[in-house]
Image: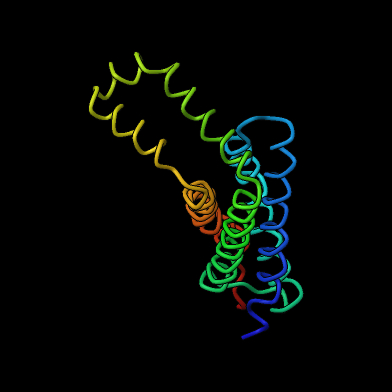
Length: 170
């Protein structure tokens, strides 16, 4: 079993660590690092998945890769990336409550600035529910959102990369 997941563990862990480091770095540059960290995730996730599957194919599986093997390696990669990112970002926000307060205030300001547009599109009730959910937001919510936005594109990228790199023995 280690043969199948040794590269996935390495690249998933590295990508998750990079995601946490990007969140910390962006927090020094912007009041709300969450949106740019999501963009960073869209870049690092497919790279980590590609490298994990490619290294598995070339170095652990004699140059062959079935679709199922690619999906398995990719799944472990993006899930580990999401778990490491979730834990790291949650820990950063718990240890630095002023950062969490800045993120929350930034999200409230964006919502207030867009009130007319939001109300015209989805109605006053939806706006009020969104406002209430942001007011009740906790650090776990931000970390979980980041992790989910690693998992959703991770599945998509894994499917594509597994198809592209697939090579079965004749």
